[in-house]
Image (cartoon, rainbow, N blue to C red; front, side, top):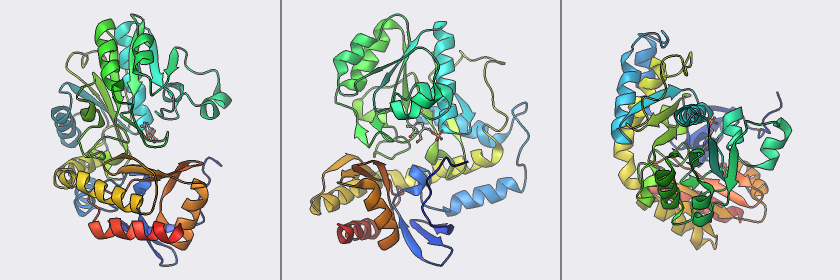
Length: 365
Ligand SMILES: Cc1ncc(COP(=O)(O)O)c(C=O)c1O
């Protein structure tokens, strides 16, 4: 279907920060499949884990135990909220799990979400994504979603009451244009949820897994959610989603409530375990690398937003600049809207590549 406006480039190979097209041209990738190739293309440990697991067992389904997803769930739980994990195949599916958990727990209830937020394209996730252009053609949506301004902690606090099932937020709004949440917003969300017995769901699908320098985006606000969602970079390029529920709510979903044929298959789970191993080495460098990239871009006179290696700059014609970057500079970037260009390089990007990207952007400008 015509669901994507693709660039006229066909990629055939990738390694680290580099991609090669079918004519042998080399590109510098500062998008990483929108933060999916978190540790660069074809990270050797991920390739090895996939090779090894796919030679032993590819699929048996969720009626049986297998070791890679069990280990992955234990690790994710230990690294975040404690509690339990549901493994799915995508970000939107991780969100669906979180929404279903929250409604079952409250026996119904409403969701409070943020304007400019993005949580995916399935009906529940789309209903949590209050953007007219994305929602309108598909009405009626799932009922019971209420959007508040992302820069108004008091409005958020006031929007939560005893009928709220959950507040759903991204600590750094990614698709909305790399906007770190207003200071005090996550704290207000936490306080409101505590007061009214609602759940705080943090969508860490784009800002989690070390992207902002901390392992989780919510750490910057010093709060902890009740539930969090992961996807994108977790599988090292393979499709995966995860919904982590803290101990107080990890028993809400029971056998028969939710499921997925492919979710948490052994191959993608083995890849994710390799990603978590490699992330331990890469994450300590993220803050300094992010600062180097930010300073480089600011040195070009650009207005930069974001945290860690989740950055964006303002420009007159984002899509035009991105198309020229690809064609003239062989640099892969992305526009989140008409005036914003987003950079999501791998977390283990070399300093020379950061400088090289800045110099290519400088040449374009
Ligand atoms: C914060 C956030 N949530 C959810 C999603 C949806 O993930 P997926 O495309 O894997 O369904 C995305 C994808 O961009 C995202 O950035």
